[in-house]
Image: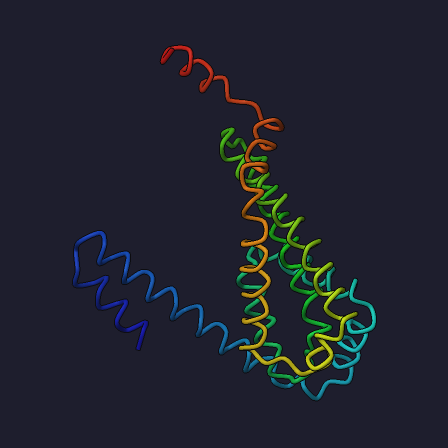
Length: 215
């Protein structure tokens, strides 16, 4: 239905705003159709002993989950799509919180690889600074999540969900809590990140010349 509405808007409305709304609706439709197809494709993995054994190992060795999330995100160049794949895999009933959270950390760091790549491709100074801030933020985010999860586990706050099965909604909620919580906690460091990026990346030559002309 969303795809049909989006297509109708794109074909019948000529204004930029209407076309953008149509593109958004069509994009959402394609995204969720993709997730449904992935979910249907991986449903058979629920009976795979190899698949079950792999996620059992991730529960014992979180570094495997971290590296898996990092590798997949770096390859497909999209943290959102990688989280979507993780949600699709939840249909197998093999994913637990202890397996999910290191994979999400890996996805956050895998997103940094994409940012670092694009920032190094003939980007302007401000674009490079934005990329640096994104990388530094994700590093701080990962460290912060590790500390909070470790403390919460030691205090027993995570005992009820540590080995609980995670469905698609639970994975989405966990990702949202991690992202939103870290954003709020690290918000006071925004100016520090900005100043640091300016020290690392100097102004472009064109920007310096423009500043002299303005002066």
